[in-house]
Image (tube, rainbow over all chains, first blue to last red; front, side, top):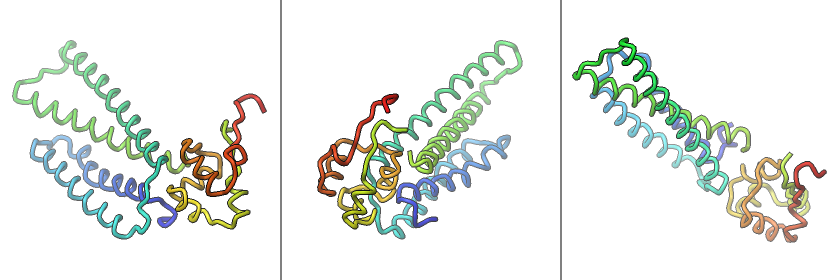
Length: 142
Length: 71
């Protein structure tokens, strides 16, 4: 199956694997989030992506990308952007609602970390959506 | 069904090109040739001209436009 995939498709599967591997624990260890943990995840995803993409580039002879790859990439970015924008509106709306209703009382110490966690989570979901949308487009042959 | 249909598979077979050979000649991936042959992807005008040129036919002989709802 791997030989029937184009170079771009292989890099997408590698990206998805790296994203799930690094970001996955973020959602399960949510209560212990800290600025250091978020920074660590960013460094980890960059290092893992460099390693995986280098391996794929080394083992793939034909590294041609074409107009269809670029079109699928644009579709992925559109899906990612729409996800991020929707989550932003939803997140800010919920924040406003809960604050207005008195369910949430944010102290100045926790505001920074709270916003960092929420926005980082939104970025992760949008990033994974972008990658999955591209894989789906390739599987559907566009 | 797409509005643009093509005869790439038939013309390629007549010239005994493999999908990879045709892809190399027009500068796309084999997966793109497969998608074009299955009418799942309509190429850009530039790629369409390249396909027709490599297969030695005119653009109209290779690609047909059928407006939706008129077949």
